[in-house]
Image (cartoon, rainbow, N blue to C red; front, top):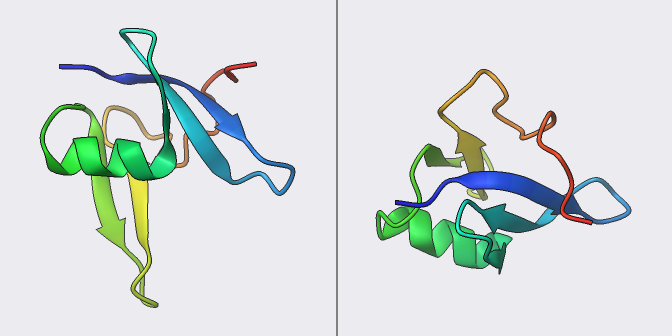
Length: 72
C-alpha cells in the first residue's frame, strides 16, 4: 500500500497533486479514486455539507496536509 508523502498546491493554496511513497505524482482526483479502491492508505474521503468530497489525513492530526512538504 502506498501513502501520501508530499503535496503540490496551486496559488490559492488548494492541493492539486500528491506524491506517493513509491514516487508517483498523482492528481487530487486520481488520489481520491485510489483511496476508494484501497490502494492508498492513511487517507479518508469525507463529504462536506455542500456535497463536495475532500481527502483527509487519518494518520495524524494534520487533516489538511498543511505540514506536508511540497513536491517542487
